[in-house]
Every structure is written in structure tokens, then in C-alpha cells.
Amino acid sequence: MGIGKKQKNGEKITLVPSTGITETGISFKILCYLPEIPEEAIRIHLDDAQLIIATSNQNETVVQKITVPVDSYICKKKFRDGVLEIILERPFKPQVDN
Image (cartoon, rainbow, N blue to C red; front, top):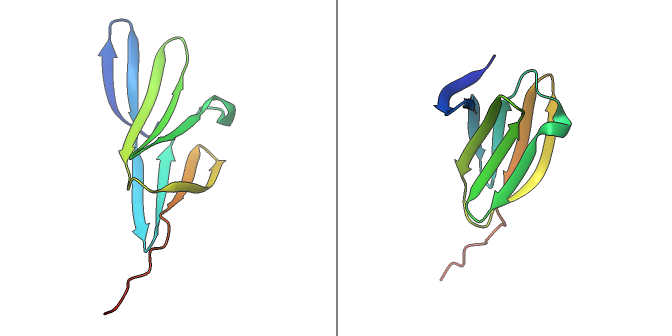
């Protein structure tokens, strides 16, 4: 199912999805594997230096928290065939040569 870890909290199970991250210059590409989960049930929240991907139903909660640079923003997101792809970018800061 592509789920990395399971944690049981009382009766509800918390799942941590398998996630891949690659960095390319000023951007980050995040792939999160969420098979059998409808796109409309996925919540994405960028809070300061943390990207949170979450969804839940009566029996389980799926949560992935990823630390990102503070000034990052979501540039693009797409969901297809159970894979959520998010592109984060950081503002370009030119270096000043003395």
C-alpha cells in the first residue's frame, strides 16, 4: 500500500506514508505515496518551516510532516494514480560580490 509506518493510538491507527524528496537548486520535489485515497480527502498545509500532508477516515489517519526552509512556498501540486507531487520553491536571493 506504500505506507511507511503504523502507529496505534487507542482504536485509531496513524499511518505515515512513504515519501521521497529531491532538491534541485531553489526547488524541492516531494512525492508522497497515497494509494486508495481520493484527492479531495488530502489536506496540504505549509506552516512556517513544516509541510503537513494529512487525510483521515473513521479507522485511520495518514500524516506526513516534512521540515522545509522557512521561506518556501508551494509552486505546484498534482495528484495522479495515488502519488501526490508537490514542488516547493524558495525565493531567489542573489549574492552580492564585493
